[in-house]
Image (cartoon, rainbow, N blue to C red; front, side, top):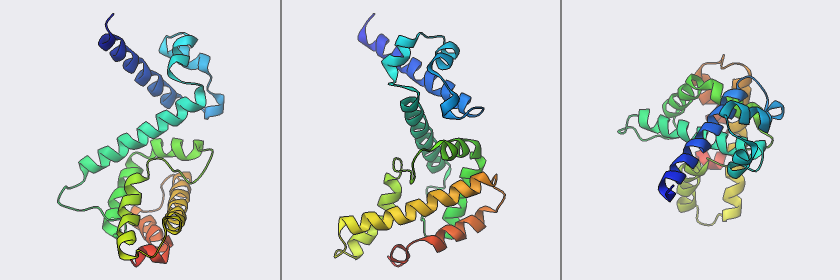
Length: 191
């Protein structure tokens, strides 16, 4: 078997394992999902699983990161390219929250299964949108100070989304968007 064919099969198996664990997460918390269970559903042996992932927790981390990236890319594709997304704008945030609500089951799994907060991976684009303009406007702020401001925003953003998810997305998107904007550190709002 040539390397290209092997690589393609490896990638197919890799994605298959991730999809299986993601569907299992709809019914069970991560601590109740076993390697044996995943192997049985994927029709693979344990050594194949361990060729792809160190353990079930690494599989979960990779899977939920990939799902969040997929969703964010999908959101960007659905957005009107003429409209520049702005996290300081009620309309932009409402649009983003509508997308989250429509894909709520995925965010519920991610937010309920998290072992640590704030969520650090996948926030690179948000960092660029919020912090880079502030860096240009306020060059006297150190990278360390900027990181603290970003962490303050990111933490409140994550926990507001978690509470909204825990409440089964009952509040209107516009209401949550206003709460998010009002919870931003003042320095980010005044960029």
